[in-house]
Amino acid sequence: FSLSVDAVRAQVLQEPSLETTEGTGVNITCSHPKIQTNEYIYWYRQLPGRGPELFVSIHKDSKELPDSAGHVWVSSDRRSSALCLGWPRRGDAAVYYCALG
Image 1 (spheres, rainbow, N blue to C red):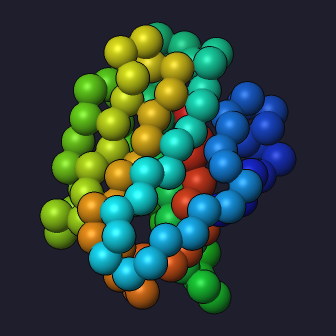
Image 2 (cartoon, rainbow, N blue to C red):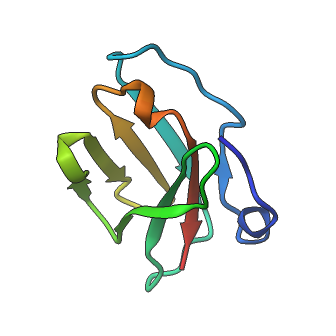
């Protein structure tokens, strides 16, 4: 997991790194205390050797991820969110970015 310069400017904070084993669920948290009412939360995934791709976008509440991979959750005050991977596989090993927009 990585924190980009743009994320720092937008005051989005993530854990610097996180590890799990195959099949053991993991929550990747993101803090965005200065989120604006109209802003969406975007989660990107960057697989090894590839460019970042949009994984999921959300405004509030929670949303299931594609292919039943898990879900993304937003706190009631929208100041934090979490990408929850229920059954991660080797193919999910990637850098995950949180952004606002």
